[in-house]
Figure (cartoon, rainbow, N blue to C red):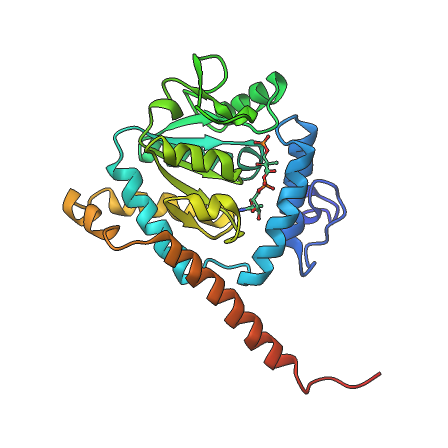
Length: 272
Ligand code: PTJ
């Protein structure tokens, strides 16, 4: 029998009880804190995660029907792509490294490290994390880099062989400027972002309003399933997709959910 203080029961910090009602969420935070110590995550990544948690509450911490549709359409775009690339930052490497490598192998797509808070130490740590998860090739660190036009953040540095020459880019926890710049370069951008109002969500070709911890495994299983589809079926799937409508559906979903929750609370409980 496991000792009650084993990391499996209590999380790596040894303080999260197995029966804690918010256990899953707290274990994800532990992963991020560990990644911070390993130079994978930037401190700002913790703040970004907190913002994501808030939006996750609003959608009910579950993959919604409209997110499932976006995931299916994203799978079709990735399978149809000639040069698909998965752009990996600190939060993604901390939360879903194995799943990212499996997804890249399955499509197949290239993996590229691309950071907003870029430094050599983090680039190397993230590359090594992906390699430990099974990646054989990781771009964006030692290979030839070029600059995305009209972009001034560190995210402008991309691999010549990777994002620069890609046709479809999958990214998450991104900043809107680069998403906009990539779309201007003629690329299809698939983003995973819990905030439907972020600039990334709005500028993307397809936005998956979901947590990367749920969306990436679901995308992997969709890619596996749809790999057997013929080209025409894949093309037909995304024909009528409009990302602005997708964002509108996400916002209505949140608003209706909050209205229903509010009705549930009305008239209940006792006055103090
Ligand atoms: O690793 P780096 O250096 O590239 O830095 C990455 C961060 C995340 C610090 C940087 O890109 C950043 O500051 O991001 P933002 O502008 O805070 O945007 C992050 C977005 O991702 C927000 O809209 C959050 O709601 C959303 N988000 C946070 N956690 C998750 C998420 N979306 C999906 N899954 C999550 N787990």
